[in-house]
Length: 354
Ligand code: PLP
Image 1 (cartoon, helix red, strand yellow):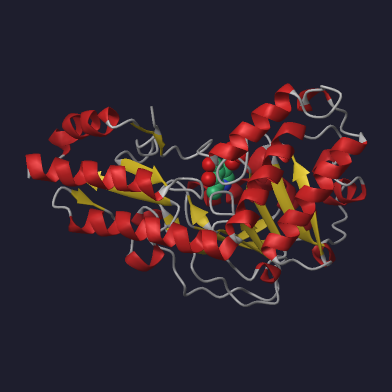
Image 2: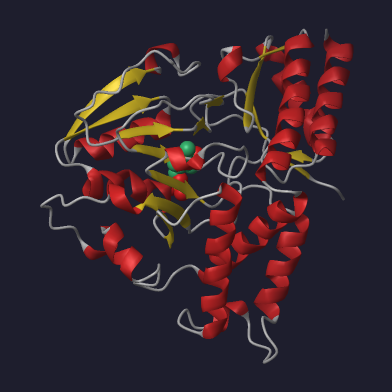
């Protein structure tokens, strides 16, 4: 039975990645050991780390100024680690959604936060491009993709201040000038791997002396010195990331993936705009290519629509619990075919109930 998985995260991964990870869990190397049984200080794991790091750097075109870490605590811990390590006095944030807001709340516990734009009053349906980053702030923090509402930053500012970006829900989905960023973080459970691991990419020269006594696990410098094995890392998730990154590389890299992602999202947005029974509330230029949200115009038809898509083996289409409606998360691994199945259901629904 083919399942069409639109979950927002943990979410769909390439089938061959799943197959290879399962194989490695059963029998990783010639000694018959499971991946779950190897030491994080073994030669086997050293090779996995090296390969995964190189794949991240190559796919993102990062130079030697950057280090790649594989940490735990989710993107949520980065909401704290970023200000702990990088804020002397004040930082600037964009409030483009609930996750951005969570990052702001954590930063406020550590220093002063200047909010350059907040979309909260308009329910985060757009992202302003008219904000100015003050020269005197320690860094500028943004969230590249609002997973919940379905907006995506298309333009990143030019500034001398380090740009820190939460790319949890669109990392490796589109080509950007990644060298523009001082720090990028992304939890793995959407476009990369299983939950329990966060990729953190740091431009070394943004690390400053804060005069703060940073707890060891929260200190980027300690993780850099220990090459992500200050404590026991999530071996499984790092290995699975390596497989996904190889899959991206074999597909032709991020640009090719981006082209496919645009194709999928365009088809779906076109259908939402065309169909009499649905609407999307996001400003067109800010629509996300990863999380496509939509609502029924007639709420009383909800049960009918839900029955129809569930019958087609579609899963994970419910909107986020704070927003309601529907959300199709169309990450890298979701095939065009699944998007087409959803579109066909929407068309059929309109034919019957319009
Ligand atoms: N940031 C964004 C943009 C997210 O979408 C999420 C989770 O969905 C998070 C942060 C939180 O990630 P985690 O649960 O790994 O801490």
